Length: 459
View 1: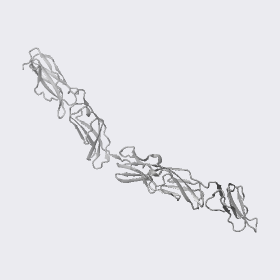
View 2 (view 1 turned 45 degrees about the vertical axis):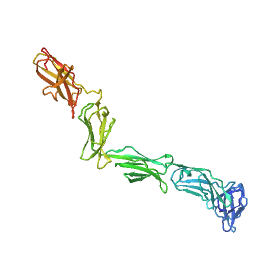
View 3 (view 1 turned 180 degrees about the vertical axis):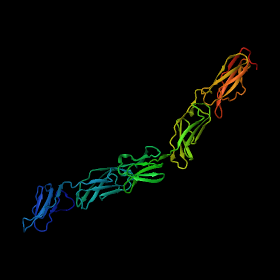
């Protein structure tokens, strides 16, 4: 069964329509749910269509020579009579109303039920620069000016469809890929997960992710996550469509591969507290193998060490106080590093701008002429490698002060005590301490006197 004209099965009021049952020979019978039933002829011509003609139509044939013999019923055909005709629809390909700048998009006018007809199309679009008469409007590399509202209608013979509903096309700025790493160092025997995403995410479907490592293509995946076990410089971008539309590249992420060599921070000399002005060396030592290394430091103090294995502080101050840790990076393979060492704390005493002053004690403080006297020099940290210097205090009566005269064998003794034999007169003594290389000296102690029943020693 056919309907003519075969433009579409939706017709306007007043149009002429022919419904035909194609059977060679015999009598035609019709069945319909419309108000008006066709006559039993093979052709039903409707000269001025109305809504009463709308409905489903089917037919069959009956032999004239043998009335009990018939064909099967044909498939049903739906006829619709409307005052507006079929309504077109504007579709987008790809089927997204949000398109990125630079992508290719096709705007299409589709008329359901109008297949096979010769249509002329009319578009209403805010941004169309030329009149379009085809059903398809292809935009190569869309720009912001292509965004806006699109609608269409179609004409066949002398009849126009109604206008489609408005479809709004929104053009977004070219997106940029974002790369995140759950860690920037691959642990020994482990891996790191990298995640690539497209931002903004309002139009995030259909992406493939293109991965790069050290300037070369690495992988192409539909999943935005990869697991890597080797170090290097990684970045990514997204791509979709045909031809492929690419996002901006992400920022690169440097991934290190951790090796089994162990880093250790040491202090030389290893004193628990350093005085202002002392010299100390902070050293990064890497154990295992004879690999050549570059060194990296991390500290929470104001002054960052240079990237060398040894950091020599020649005149320490409180600015050098803090936690120090280091790691090594292979010179031959820059993405291979050790783990960070444990932190070592360096404390530079800044209690006063003055040097520390030892305390001198004498025993006995009263003695009989000719007896021995023991001097003891006490510093704040007695186990920190001090050497001791012993002096006799020589009064300068004109200046009301004293000068210091080094005692025999009293220069740089390892012991913090000094014995004077056969003292016969009252005398004053002073000490001071020194340590390190170059040697750092404390201030002199306050003078202490050993009193004798005899006179003061003559000078």
